[in-house]
Length: 334
Image 1 (cartoon, helix red, strand yellow):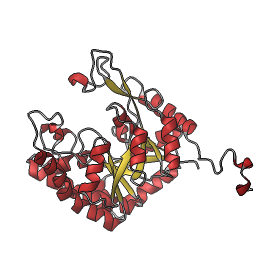
Image 2: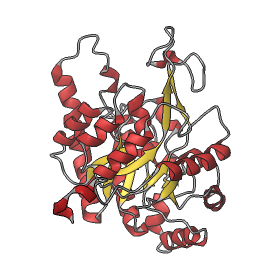
Image 3: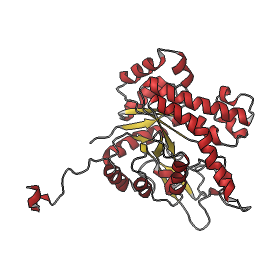
Image 4: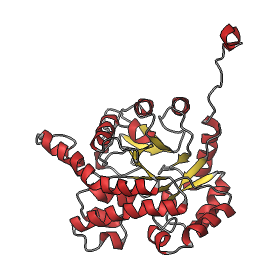
């Protein structure tokens, strides 16, 4: 079983789609995970222009690239978040509008519905993204946080995301939340609670990204084992903890790449993620979707990193065994 090796384009959104497709093929990838920002995949155009998706498909086919997922992290973030000035930088003028928080939340929710419709037109069955969170700022629990406030955050998830997921269901598309700090689900137990809040509806699952779990101290393999039927997509991304007695996992308000941080992202294979065990576990749960490189390493040239990462993923991926290694000694199998 050779899984598709794809590249997520979010870190190349400054490049036009034609150049991005060419580079992706030159790096050695089988496919591409299109970001819904820059000009890589534009939701409004996909719905307004009957030719848009066909033209995108033709462009990708010309470069011998498959597309199994699109991603709309930035807009999804604004569905549940308490909106502030930071969001203007990640949202289009149409979603930001006048910046009134309630309006931003509402427009973001409508755009996520439209993302499902656009994915259906594109022939894609998975949309990766974020949900945002109205309660992330309560993470430390001081001043003491009443349980009712946390309950309200998960109730808001159900209130705002169930109508979005209804559209996903109508379109035959799944939403894969990238479990990630600042989202309603950021580790194993909050992922469980998110599923419970949404009554375990099939439209909602996870985009597994081990890097975000590793630095929190969560074993990525345990996450896979906890949700074997909810892994709708996989990101290959690495991270490293650099705790030296002076640094901490909260990163001290220091920017990416600062050597004083307690952790940072690394190019795949250059951090602390045990990809060997992840591949074995993906085989055990019968995950057959893409292995999509989300490349982030501020200390490395991105083109060098993307090409190296493609080779790395091909090297680590392998099919499961079709038989026991000691089957020759088992008379029942002869």
